[in-house]
Image (cartoon, rainbow, N blue to C red; front, side, top):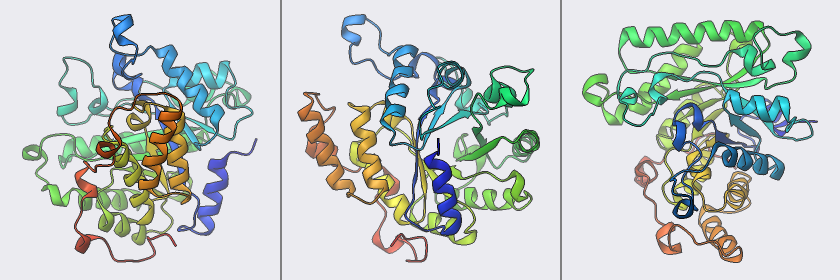
Length: 357
């Protein structure tokens, strides 16, 4: 079945700043959070446990894939093994399955741990063979059973040795992926260690990340390049700068922490306005009162059918119709709490090609 992701990639190759927008649900948190990955359990008062189960998490994935409004469903290798290979969930779906291809130590967020505050170290639990075929010894036909798209993450901390190891690991992954016909998209995190360690001023982080991306990919031929990028949104100027520098790059944003509903919807609307053509929302979808309605609003905003403000009101209307109690009252949920979105008008960019029409 034709995948919307492939159709949109082809359309964006013809017109980098066209209308198509790639939307993904990031349901790979079990490779970072462990027990807390499925999110808070609204029935926790009855069960005595704070979090939903892995089975409930996977049922949410099935429902969102069946809804068909996202282009990519990102999962852990074990979840993809169950849903993609064993259940054939994506066989008759326009949604593309994807798997987190590495899990660097900065996302090892275990209770009582301190890994996330130490310089990121390269690591991968899954292999490309396991992602594609569900086994290490596999045939060419078996490779077609699983996912053929992966998310690879890098974190640069302005620490020469740690950053060199990160680049070496990514190079090895790229070479193997190219040899096995495995596609990937690249996530570039902001430094994960404290500013006193990485020494990059807060107002320089956007430029630091942009420069690392452009410098790193300058040494990568088309055959090994990522299909698109996933980065934190650092505001209009940095988004336009990166999109303007290399129009062959499809730049996407990550959703970040849960925040208000308006935070999520405004982030998506602003990122597209200034050049982004992809977005991956994980916690924002997973913590929503009604995940299917939340995704439906994201799709409408991405397709420019509705404004973020209209989407918040419409979402609360959906909750009311379904008799679902919202986390916040509508006036509170219309508040913007994400600092990067409260930029001054004077810093709102150059009105270049990064804007959508």
